[in-house]
Length: 313
Image (cartoon, rainbow, N blue to C red; front, side, top):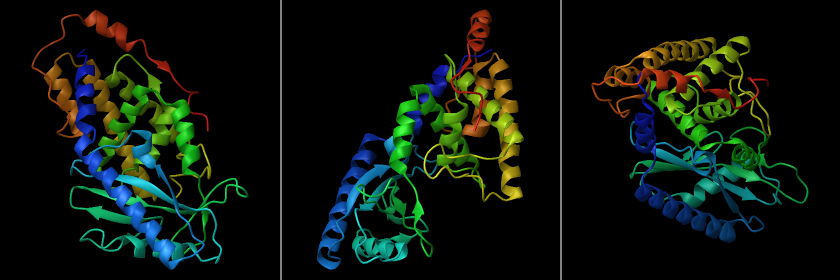
């Protein structure tokens, strides 16, 4: 039974965004903020934007994709909407403000404005209206639709109160799996929510990953849903087609089967190749060697204990 915890730690480092790219992203973020401030000051009196970093960058679960790209979410918050304009109009004003920042034209997506950078990252700008003196939660601008209640900060606070260092790593592994497989696999937010719900701690990351996969499959077979634990408490799987649901569940089942084999495999090289099938070629190959003390490994595998409440939602 090969203990590949050391390879998972190396993989975690490999998934992490470099300091140099983080620095570029921060500089780009500040540049965008300044352009938005100036544009609204000049063109839209009464609208004074504030900003709040959210998403995986804030949670420290950001990964480099297999294409060596990453993203940052920077919420654009307006304390009021004095002209009562639509969310689509507010989004368009933000898009106008950041035009010309890069060679690529900003993209007006359903729930954000996206700015792409040649250095291999993008910055998403969700647009919110939030009067803290009157409203309990922000309203998210949605293209060609009504504002929707959403509260990214509430989720960030919830995550910070419930996370562990190992959970953060497990989320990154799960996101890397979805990135490697793609083909309509769940988004990073869904994998983060599932991890919060079904995480089980262990002395080893490989064993903890196996157990959370098993628990996710067990609970989704009972009820295929992924409820946000914070506002708006929606089901992130609500719009999944039967094809997309089957794709995910089939991938999940295969991953569990080979995760079990990898844990039982005594040869480091063979075990690492099993993990590579799901986590990609960035997962390091182990040496062609066998662990010398299998009894200690069996003991380690038996130390897993549930971190959460068994998947009640």
